[in-house]
Image (cartoon, rainbow, N blue to C red; front, top):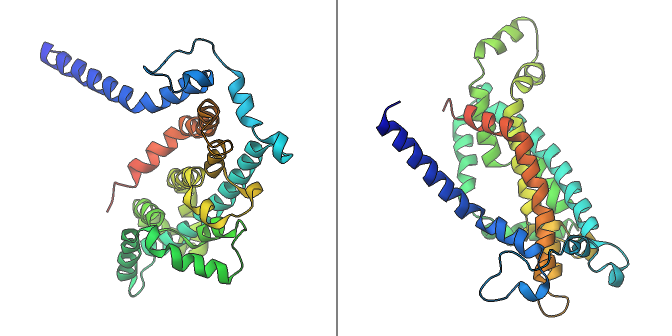
Length: 284
């Protein structure tokens, strides 16, 4: 290795390390604040290392409001979020896989036009359709229930359909032809040939949807009316308005607890995640 290449590599590492620190700054500040006494949370100049480590902030954040409401909101919010994530992942994976298979592996009239139309829906932001969708759910008497937050997952989404279609296109057509010669139906090819080979892409779609449900704030805010049905993202607001101010130390402790499962999920699934993202871009 030449001196020039070693210098270039060293500069690359330094730039990546500096960039990592910039992106980690909010996370480090959240962890620092979560362990501070409340009087140090807004002190100027900012205090990075607390004078005393307040580990009990995490427990206080979990049981916050239990004396007033008679139940533990944080755990209830976590269960609500997991419930929506599980139902949503089932619907998202099944529906998107079916639609993507039709766009990728079956020849039918108007397929490319409908696929382009499906992709075009990604250009329409949610606030544009928010009122119309709310009116539909209201007519169905679903406002105040979990249904508006998980039922739409069973009808597919343009981004996930695109992601899975691209992956399905990378699977050799000869495998499907061989299965047809052996008498396998189209549904059987989808079930026994395509799906087993598409686990990385399906894992990516599931992970994306879990992240979406975990971070979704607007949906629960619009459709949920009972505080016992709130999700974690909406429940974090609970720490901001109880006494006309913000309990920053407990808000940051609760935020750390909310973020931790997503960090662990990414670390345990990063191999499938990277593999799925990489393979979906091989063939256009």
